[in-house]
Amino acid sequence: MNYHVLTLFPEMIEDGMNTSITGRAITKGLLSLHTVNIRDYSVTGNGRIDDYPYGGGAGMVMQAEPVMRAYEDLISRIVSKPRVIYLTPQGQVFRQQMAEEFAKEEDLIFLCGHYEGIDERVLEEIVTDYVSIGDYVLTGGELPAMVMMDAIARMVPGVLSNQESGQTESFQGNLLEYPQYSRPEDWRGKKVPPVLMSGHHGNVDRWRRNQSLLRTLRVRPELLMGAEFDKADRKYLHALLRQETEETVTPEELNFLSKLLAIREKA
Image (cartoon, rainbow, N blue to C red; front, top):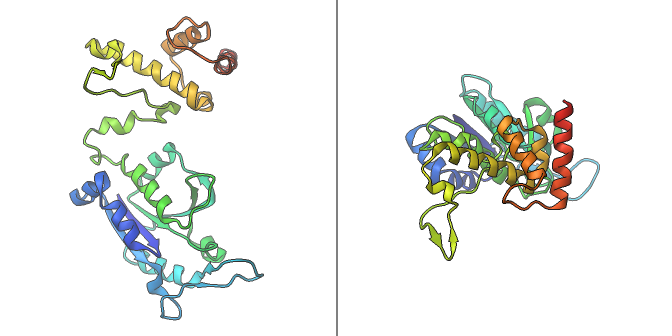
């Protein structure tokens, strides 16, 4: 996976990405990172790349020409024509499925805006994907770009020491990840669930699956609407609904679960 970032702050991207798991992956050659400073393509030659917006209004707008020049120079050195991701609150909200999709690409270009945004004309020319990491506004696109690159990198073969972990974490199959425990067995009076100490892999797998279902119900119930359930899942959810399990479920959760199971049974 080759990351290319068009940015006003290349050092910010480089410092963030050259650490931890992504840093090790770059060192191993599993990922590559190329930053392009848009200021180097200033029309005036003094590093200025912004101007006042037509029609008035607060703030400044990044000019089209420096962005286009930076993009064209970058493209001239890449064999294929990669997807260009523009980080903007107006874009589609980034999700795990998108990370998996982007991880299939050989090259990705991230365009990081600043100020009041980028001249719309250049966006129309080069951007293929408008993506947001949430419904809030940041000072620039660098942090969202790093969030996306980190999530995508985890889907690239070899980046994680245990590749399975990239496929079994939160949001896989529309379920949140189950609780994790480590030594000691008894920490300040709180003990590890006995099933995890049993050595029975089938029981452990079932417990983890049930916990994923329960956690999703409690924290992100809407995700369950798009999840797939097998026979054992449905049995556990019905047991929750009848309150026949050790876990306590709130009235609101019971109401949601009742509606969910009714919809599934009609389908």
